[in-house]
Length: 81
Image (cartoon, rainbow, N blue to C red):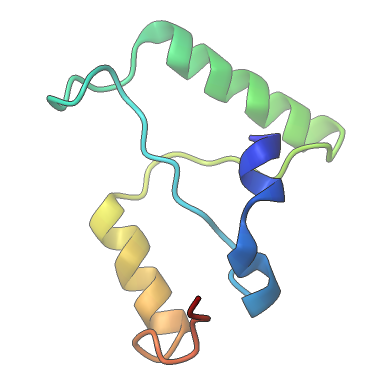
């Protein structure tokens, strides 16, 4: 999580969230119990100490991109490299 935050170049553009897609394998197997435990621990650290950004789960990939498009005038205000 910390590396993702440090490498999130869009933070300078005002983007306030990032997508981290995870799961078992590449066939849609979903997250395993240890992956969900890591998420729980990240939430605890972010809620109690502020060392990590707020971590939530629940938005679909499509929903994430729809939200980005709404916040960036259909992508017009996103930075390009």
